[in-house]
Amino acid sequence: MTDRTTSSTTRSPFRSAFAALAGTSIEWYDFYAFATAAAIVFNDVFFPADMPTALKTLASFATFAVGFLLRPLGGIVFGHIGDRVGRKKTLVITLLMMGIASFAIGLLPTYDQVGVLSPILLIVLRLVQGLAIGGEWGGAVLIAVENAPKGRATFFGSFAQLGSSVGALLSTGMFSLMNMFGDDAFDSWGWRVPFLASAVLVVIGLVVRTKLEDSPVMEEIHADQEKSGRLPVAEVLHKDWKTVLVGVFSLATATGGYYVVTSYLLSYGTDDLHLSESMLLNGLSLAAFLELVVTPFLSLLGDKVGAHRVVVGGLAGVVVLAIPQFMVMGTGSVALIYLMMLAMRFVMSALYGPIAAILADGFAPHVRYTGISLSYQICNLVFGGFAPVAAVWLASLAGGAYWPPAVALMAVSVIGIWCTLRLRTYHRRRAAAATTPVERTPVPAGA
Image (cartoon, rainbow, N blue to C red):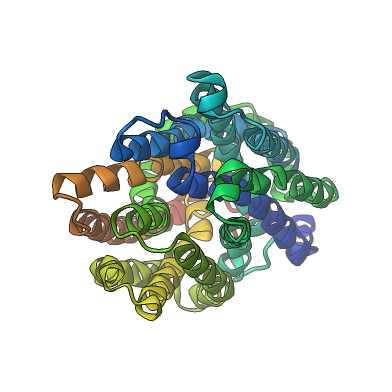
């Protein structure tokens, strides 16, 4: 590695990490706003009043799920741009797409106003969101990780992950605030405010990202004409398909499991147990705040003891807490419900924070954006978007009981433990086989 590259990778790690955090916070705010609205209001706003409640809930979550259909495509398209043109330009495009789509959702007419056109328009905008978020995560991760100093990749990579916590906190906070105006106001106009407010956040994000320097790794990629001329997705699927596949399952709990303990938990608590929406939203806000606080510390721990160990520990925690998380809902005790929400979010922070550096370390720099985006977005397609729908379906098969979704979450977490350990093996093999300067370009040690 050249001296120039070494100095450039350490020149602005905190600035790059903050830029990653700012952008992902806004994009995940928009994303979680849709997830929250799908759980508590879209079923009544965008679908006929005479539909059965369970069917409307499934239809509402289905609109949430369709956004995941285009996420792998977004990962391929924007991964290609990010690997060939640069991380920074790609991130500006994805932020604009996500923000415009979210603002437009806040302006959509209801089913009572335009009939079936209403859910169709909602689905179209949701697809735009899915395409944008498909390219967002990989670039934000790499801006932070590739600028990190040696031995700190897990810590700085977690800043991109913190955007999920900040976005969830802002989103649930906004919905909690709008809920204070009462059910009638919330159902008629209050739910629109969080989507319309995203316009202000997008402007802030664009200012931050346009001032950002691109990843120093791009300089070496552009200098190596042989590698920069290849098609990234073709190379990844030819050489690294096992890494992509194992990455998908190592991420399953961090993505699909996350929606089970947020969106589905919210739907289960309100529709089946008739618990207060405000109480549950406040609990989810507290859990998001806890995730925001503990994720950097757990990621620092990953730099010291190994990111894989931290992720495996988090997955084991999910296995232990899956059934108690839902069991306490039936007690109606606010204290117990909040305690389990916080405990579950803590262990999920252990697997969500360090995973950025783990995945980035699995692919060569010139195809890294494409590789990590494919793993992450295929996982979101399979396990993420359909997790709430699958949870509702599994519960309905058992007469509304919570245990089938909980057991499914446990099973996915056990598989995730095995795949995370396999991913570590693949990383070691790739590192041992690396021979060229570009292949040895950081991700810095510590992942």
